[in-house]
Amino acid sequence: MKHTRCLQQDWDHSGLSGLQLSERGISSVEEYIANRKDRLWQKDELLAYLARPDVSGEDKGYARCAYLLRNGKLPFQCRQCFLLPGNCVCGRVAQFTPRTKLVISMHPDEWGKGSNTGCLAAASLAGAAMLMRGHKEHDEQLQALLDDPAYTCAMLWPGEDALEPQQLLELSQQRGTRIALIALDGTWDCARKMKSRPLRKYQGNAAANGRVCTLEAVAGALLALEGDAAMHEGLLHALKLKVDAMRRQKHMAEVYGTTAADE
Image 1 (cartoon, rainbow, N blue to C red):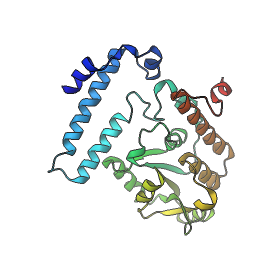
Image 2 (cartoon, rainbow, N blue to C red):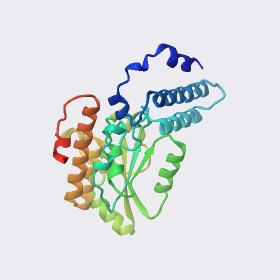
Image 3 (spheres, rainbow, N blue to C red):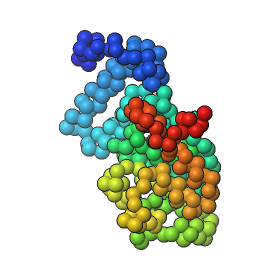
C-alpha cells in the first residue's frame, strides 16, 4: 500500500499532458495511475521473492525474466519494437520470408530497451523468434531448436575459426536441413557470456569490420546466405525507422527523415 499512497499524495500527476498520454496509447491519467500501481505491486512481489534465502539463484533468475517479459522496461511500451505506442514502427517495417530461420536470443538487460534493434529483425522476418535468455520457457524453446535434426544451427558471432556463409550453406545442403541462425542480442560483454552454447559460428573479423548493431549483423548475414538485396535493404530501412522513432521519443530531431519520406 505504500506505493499507492505515494502515487496519490506525493506525485503531482496534474501536469501529465495529452501528448504524453497519447505517446503511451492511453486516454486518461486514471489509466496511467492504475497501470503504475499494478507495476509497483508486481515489482514489490518480485523483490520480496528475490530476497528469500530459500529460493535458488536459478529460480530467482527465472522470476526476474518472467517479470521483464510481462511488464517490459517501461509502462505501455510496444512489446515488439519496445517503443511507446505513439512512436511504434511495427506497422511500417517491410515483411520478408527468408529461407533461414532466425532466432534473436536476447539478454534480459536488453529486453525492453527502446534502443534495441534485434527486436525489429524478429518483427520483419516471417518465422523469426525473439527469446529472452534466462526465461525458462524461452530457453526450452531454444534448446528444442538446437536438438531438432531438421535444422543446422549457427550462431552469428565474429569468430576467426568460424564457418564462412558458403561453408554453412554447403553443410546444410549435405545434411538436407534448413539453416537456423541464432543472433545473440546484448552488449558485447553480455554476448560473450551468452555464446557458450555448442554452435557453429559465423565468421567475421570484429577488429577489421567494426562493431555493428544486431539488426545490421542479421541483415549482412542473411545477404551472404540468401543474396536477397531487397530484404537486406528492407532491414536496413527498418533500422533507420527505429533510430528516428527513438529520437522522436526523446524529443530530438530525426537523423534519416523517415517520417517525411514515408508520407
